[in-house]
Image (cartoon, rainbow, N blue to C red; front, side, top):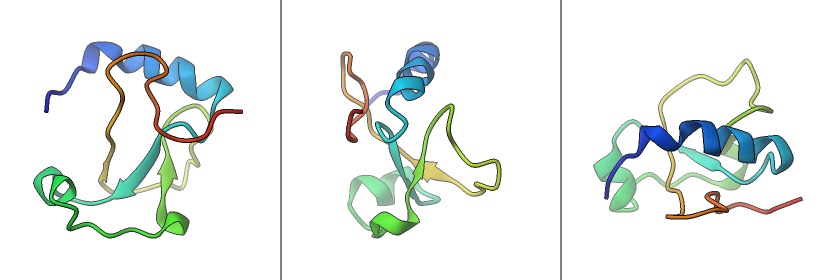
Length: 76
């Protein structure tokens, strides 16, 4: 798994029209997240991007697709 910060602007742009496209799981450790050790019910998700609450705090993990659309969540 690789991190591509160069795509950040593309991800953010996608959130403008699809605010639920990038659900994020609260989890302080990426390895635990990959091993599915950070169980998080849907009501605990935060959503990356333009519509994120300014009250959102913590460490969140997210997985994206390799090409557009990048987000795994629902499209509007």
